[in-house]
Amino acid sequence: MSTWTAQTIVNGLPQDVLDVLTDPAAVGRWAPVDFVVEGLEGDRLIAGSRARVVGRLAGRRVGFDVEVHRADEQQLELVATGPVSFDVNYRLRPIDGGSEVEACVAVRRGRGLVGRVVASATDALLAAGALNQAVSRIAREFEPAPLATC
Image (cartoon, rainbow, N blue to C red):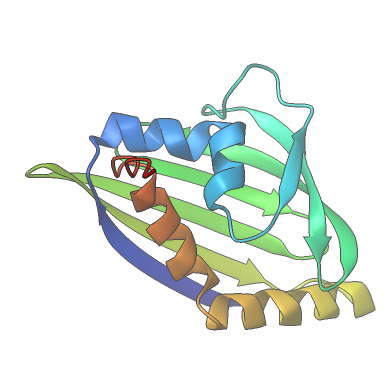
């Protein structure tokens, strides 16, 4: 199993950050991999919710069953199970003027050829900074929009 971490400071309160982390439409703006969420009851991820996530990784269409274990102002914790499994944890801590966000993704190797290929591709993506880019995009969700110029 390999584990990757990243952190950033966000100009939003923990509840606001949780909203960005649990809204499937917002996740599409910051996630390191394009995907669609299927079968989610309700309009956001909450503790106890389950969904199917489908996207492309290593040139292959892959799907993951997602189970949310915790979703509150301190933490979003979920497990995604597919060709490989991910233990995902976003910890939120209030600070003056915003929040500190710490992301941790543990990749558990899959079985068979597809599992090994997807695990290797995922590790390469994360080693290249995909998690750092994701938390940076989360922080940008809280920056003021640039003014239009003529």
